[in-house]
Length: 310
Image (cartoon, rainbow, N blue to C red):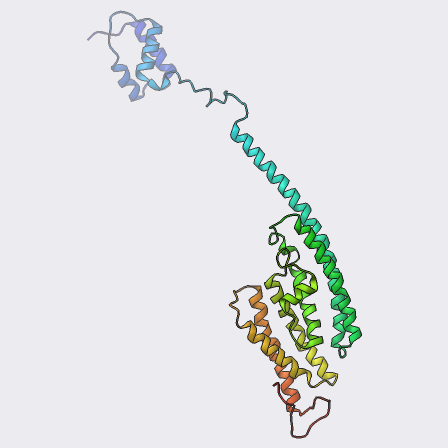
């Protein structure tokens, strides 16, 4: 066995100390033993490069990355970026136009709500006394004002054809209240229900362009039925003992008509479920009047009750 010359030993020791601070590492010793033994003294540069590349291949120079990965490519705007910006610019214009239109709608709806409150305040007086033509005429005067407001609303919606149900929620609640008031007035005058087509005519609504939604009409009718039990109690107190019979007949027919509808579990169904409680309260008042033997003219009849609804 030949011995490693001093120059080679010194060079290998220097390299080992720089690459491996721990010369007693078993991995390092095994690597050092695998080195070829030569009699010639290799140059330090050859020893360093050969030792580093053969023993520690991970120390090889890193590969170069492409310019696109390094972010040094062309920064010009791509077609996809331009189309994305154009799309959101269109969105911005559409949202601004929709917001402006919604503000105009709400301005008209605010006027409808204001006149509805005045109309409701006038109709509340029927609970304190019997309906008079003067009282009903004052409440009916607001119907013409509401008709003009709905005409303005139709003109605003005419600027965006086919968008009725997109903005329908902005006037839905107010329309339901209006329907309840005009159907209540119609019942006070005629004793019958105001039909859907008649309600549209009173409000000046065109069913082909800007009509009265069916659910709004039905919910308004349910709201109207909520007023009838209170009306019956106050009228009996005022001496009108025939009122419970008429209201009971009307509510029974109305409740039976609603039974024909296949209603979903929504707000309309909840309001219809409340109608049966209105009917029950009117039945209780009618039962009290009949069992007490009170005649329609306010006189008490001994041993006889009031005739029931035909």
